[in-house]
Image (cartoon, rainbow, N blue to C red):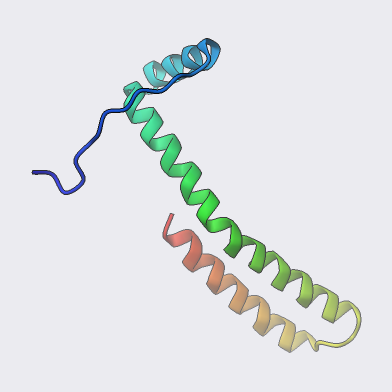
Length: 95
């Protein structure tokens, strides 16, 4: 038995969206189910990453603000930005 067996489900969707889905799926050699699975996976990955993205943006803003106010030396700012970059790289590596 597969590790993650597929399950069937019924959904109701607007006709215009269904037409767009079918057109996209056909143009890209995939089924409706495949397109839906990819779309849901990408949506959930983005939604789950959003808190981390917001933290990175806040950290970058804090570094920028600190430099502009003269509260953070350029070398310290560089170290903080390098740490932010490393966190970003780890976050995007999972995707």
